[in-house]
Image (cartoon, rainbow, N blue to C red; front, side, top):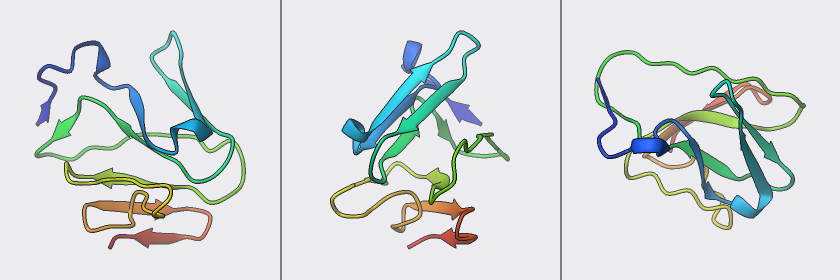
Length: 106
């Protein structure tokens, strides 16, 4: 089940949650997004989505080598570039790092 109440035009858009000065998010006409990171290890989440049941997936393409963690988080997740907390770095998120081939969770 996906809940998108009151999300309106924000539904399904990427939003920076930490390190937003280090990334650019571009929305394309085909409803895809490109997240470009210039420095650091920022975090972005998908707005307006609250998944409570079922099986879900998303797709992404990494266009350069390097460390990147992708994953899922709950409503209590709080990212912090200064604190070194990204997806998979606390008990409220789960992340996968394909570069180091590791799963991350608290």
